[in-house]
Image: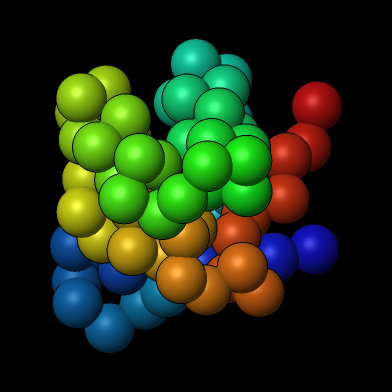
Length: 72
């Protein structure tokens, strides 16, 4: 299961977290599918149009091993 860490307010503690926002998940999944079917620039433009952050866009499109898994 892919997880990133979330830095807490004290600046020292990190805890694993996983995305639970299903709407954002669906948008990112569509962006990944668009990249696979078309090209990366189309996926970038779509994700930007959906207000996905540049850090997320870069991670999901260029580093597939760092994509988060989805837990239901």
